[in-house]
Length: 545
Ligand SMILES: O=C1O[C@H]([C@@H](O)CO)C(O)=C1O
Image (cartoon, rainbow, N blue to C red; front, side):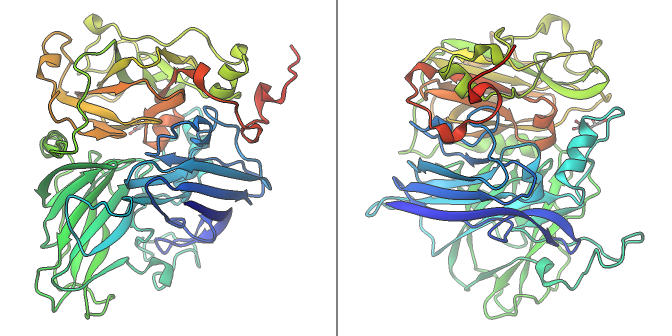
C-alpha cells in the first residue's frame, strides 16, 4: 500500500512551553504529523519547503532505506538540501514493524521543532508477542528559546558560546516555562496559553497501554517515569526485547522504546508523568505530563508532589539499564561470531584554531558541500578528502581519565570505506572532556543499519580481554546507543546496505561541532540516483578550477 503525505514546512510562532519562539512546523504543527503505516508500505512524503530563506532536509530515523540510500535525508551525505520554495518527494519502504522517528538533518533545524514519529504495524494476521489495549506515541524533547541560528553561530564563534541547558522539557510538544521569572519581555510568555497546557494521557481504568516513547532531545539524556506505575519495556529501536520492568526509563536522544503500563491504580485521581535530565548538572525543571484516569478531568492536578527522579550524576543505574536489555527469545538475530575489521573511536572534545570541537581519533568531522553519495557515484572524488580517517588512536599515550595533554585536533571530511558484506566492529571509547573530572554521555546513531550491541564497559577498552566478554548469544539490535561517561560501548554490524551512511553523536550541537563519521559501502551497487537529490556543489555539472 502506498501512503501519501503532503507536508508544508514553515516557520511559525509557537509557545509549546508558554514562551513564544520561532519554531519550524509541518502543516502548522510541532511535533509534526505521525506517519502510521504497515510493514511493507511505501511512504511518499511530498514536502514543500516554505521556510522563506532556508534549506531543509528530513531524515527517517531507524528506516534503513534498503535500495533507496538517496532517500535517507541527510544533507551533505545522501542529498543536496531542499531549496526554499521547492517541493521534494521522499519515497521509501517501511520494511519492518516498530517505532521510528523523522527529523530535520540539516544544520541545527531539529532544535526548532522539525520532527515527528513513525509507527509501523505488523502485516495482517501477525501479532505482537505481547498484548495491550491501546497504543500511544510520546516524543520527549528538550526546548531552547534561542533559535537554531543563534545556537549554531555561538558554537562556531570565537569566543565559544555554548548552548547551555535547555529552558524546558517537552512531553509530546508541551512544557511549562516559568513566565513569572523576572526579565521576561511583555507578551512573550503567557502561562494561560492553551498551547502549553500539560500533555494529558487519558487512560481507562483496568486497560493496558503501549507507550511508544522516543527522545529527540538536542542535548539532554532523560529519565522518564509515571508516578505509581511500573513500566514493562518490550521494544527498543524497532526490536522486541526480553521484557523487563522499570520504575524509570533512561532514554537518550535518538532512541525509541515501547513500554506497557496498566491503569491499575486508584482511579479517582490523576498521576504525574515526569521527565528529568540526567548526566548533566542541569538547572532545567522536570517536564511534567498528566496520566489522566477517565473520567477525572484531564486538567485536574494530581494531589501529590511529582516524582523527583534519579540523581543526575549516578551512572550505575544507567549502565545497569543498558546492560539489562536483551533480545527477546524467538526474535534474536544472531550476530556473526567474528568481525573483519575493528574500528576504535576515541571521543574527545578538542580545540581547533580557537574553536571548541568534538573529534573521533583526533579528527573532527566537516560535511562537504557535494553530498558523498553523489560524489562517489558520479566520480567527483575531488570534492572531499580522500585520505580515510584512522581506525584507532594512540591508546598507549592517551589517558582517558584526564584532560588531554594536547587538546589540538584536525578537521577532515574523509570517509571510512567498508568492504561490502563484511562485518565491522565499532568500539566507542569515551574520555575526559577539556574540563577536569568531566566526561559526558553520547548517544551514537547509525544510519542505514541496525547494529548488535555486544557490550559496555567502564574505563579503557581492553582489546584482548574485553571481546571475550561480548554477548554473542542474545544481544539487542539498535540504531542508537549511548556511550557512558569514561566508558566504552562495542557494536557490530554487517556492511550490507549499499550507500553512504552517517554515524554520529545524536546530540545536535555535538554533531554540528564535528562528532561524527561517514561510512561508504558497496556504492558501486547503488542504482541510478534521482536528479531531485542534486543541485548543490559539483553535482550541478561543470566546475571551474
Ligand atoms: O561541547 C560542549 O561544550 C560544553 C562545555 O564543555 C564547554 O565548556 C559542554 O558541556 C559540551 O557538551
